Length: 112
Image (cartoon, rainbow, N blue to C red; front, side, top):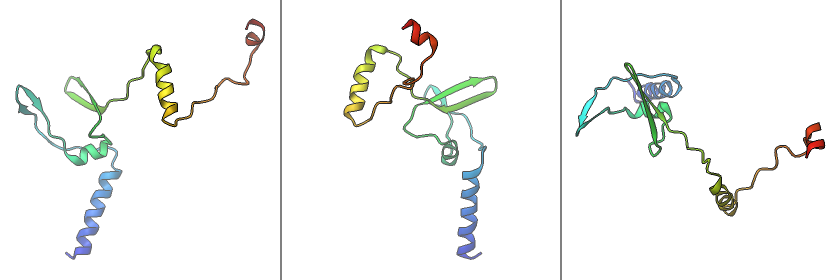
């Protein structure tokens, strides 16, 4: 097989990995100290779009373990919002406008 054919076949394989919605690899549960672990194939991590530096969530149900990238937590502590807004503005981010500006209803006109 020529070098061009080998490269072409390799590119097709990589393209199929990128475009596949689901992929499956076989692995084994292994002992890691007092715990158990699974080695994940790099292609599988890439297909899943997982960031290697991000936290992950692991969920288990009967016969299934699911790994998903953790979503950033939303800060609901109102006491810290003012400092966060000031920090963001100082970093160059622009605050959003008032989404309800210019919108009024009868209640707003008579009760406020």
